[in-house]
Amino acid sequence: MRFAVVGAGGVGGYFGGRLAQDGNEVNFVARGAHLDAIRRHGLRVESIAGDFVVDPALATDDPAEVGPVEVVIIAVKAWQLADAAEAARPLVGPDTAVLPLLNGVEASDRLAEVLGAEHVLGGLCRLSAEIAAPGIIRHSAIEPTLLLGEPDNRRTPRVQALVAALSRAGVRAQVADDIDAALWEKFMLIATWSGIGSVTRAPVGAWRAMPGLRSMAEACLREVLAVARARNVRLGEDRVAATMAAFDAVPPQGMASMQRDILAGRPSELEAQNGAVVRLGAAARVSTPTHAFIYRCLLPQETAARSQTT
Image 1 (cartoon, one colour):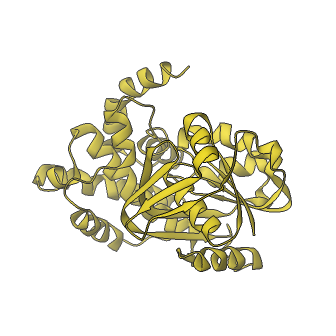
Image 2 (tube, helix red, strand yellow):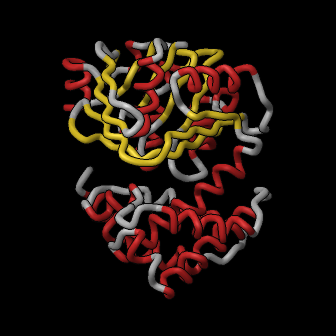
């Protein structure tokens, strides 16, 4: 198959690299030193599932050079989505599928507004990976898993073909029974972990051991659950206990990617995570006081970080 990956960071670099390793044509859209290193030395992936190098690797900063492909994978930070959607226009032909792999629950809608709803799938992944150095992706934890689906959950030929390609490449991939429920299930976990980790500046092992912060995490989870149900997403009450158990299974030093960005003073996914809970809750007339507290506490630093990038 012919792919384009917009955002060759930890997620895009890993999954795109696996697809390229299996013989698919994968065009990486990157920039700066990372792009230069991929062009010169290929894409190197250091992984707990086995290291590999894609060399030569197809890489560009101009999607128009690539043209329409069968599948576009969007794997940027949520705050970069608007620019990525515009950049992806030359990659989308009449039959192109667009697969977002971002945190949050709004990426598919935003992409549909720019690229057309008929092209856009729902998607999520579980993976801990990052750019270790220009041209190098480091996958350090979590078995790479990818769920995807049509917005109406039909098992169409295109989603089945994409799952088959990913599976051949060694990725644990499947068509979700209910892609909205899967997205919101992950959203419960990541927005809570990101928010509490960022406010406390503590790894998961520290805050989950404190009764007051465990209670705060449970309140965050229940708020997301209430918003999801108000939007007719099918999530059960059992997801609260299951997500708390998932936190307990994370290595003690674990930090969410939004937390790492905030600690480093970089722009983060605050608006797409805690901010989205508050915004979507208000639209559904659901109270979200815990997420609102987290969002307001983090907003001054987020505003400062964004001002430095303009």
